[in-house]
View 1 (cartoon, rainbow, N blue to C red):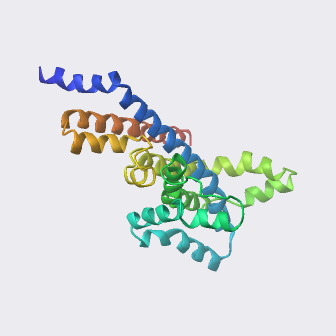
View 2 (cartoon, one colour; view 1 turned 120 degrees about the horizontal axis):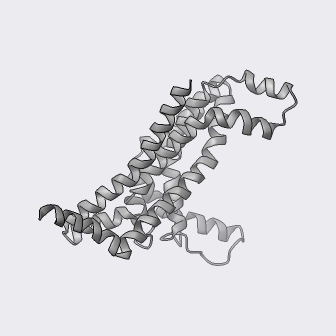
View 3 (cartoon, rainbow, N blue to C red; view 1 turned 180 degrees about the vertical axis):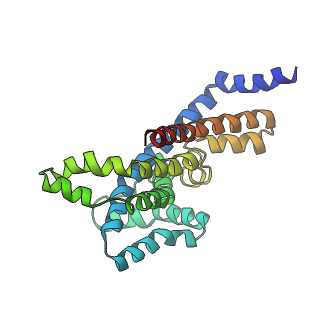
Length: 240
């Protein structure tokens, strides 16, 4: 009887459209944020690796510097920047780009900005660690053989840095999917993510069985990419 009640809680998640839409929305937001972090973080990591010894340490310090400030304070700072009377709108009006403030805060855009800003270092650092181990003579050999820069990147650089890409993507995707603070503060409750639903079930609705089912389902969603990554790593190790 108790087992049936447990499974009823999981079945309820699929019967209510709210939970399905929230899971899909969370995965969509975290996937797009991960892609943006990759597009920004990859060239940044590459530039750090190719810089001089002194410059490299300075750039790495700048990447780590935000961690010296409270995460919550950094999110509140973005609220001030994105507000209707905030710094960004004031600057755009002063430059004559817009005539009146545009809505930036409490939108999906604000949530994307917050997530990308917060988790970008988690993308850059694994990529940097992976690129540090690259054999750059392979790139020189490809250039000597007449390969164009784009061809060299696709056929040599990208395959060699793929472990860093996957590791960085997982480090961004997994915490971003269950993010609560950023959607709540920068989204103002207008952006649907599973962290908010989980909070409501535990604290507002006091429905702990359903809240537990939501948490376990979220855990399964996040564990699957990790298991796939481990499987791919195992296959690559066996091939060697």
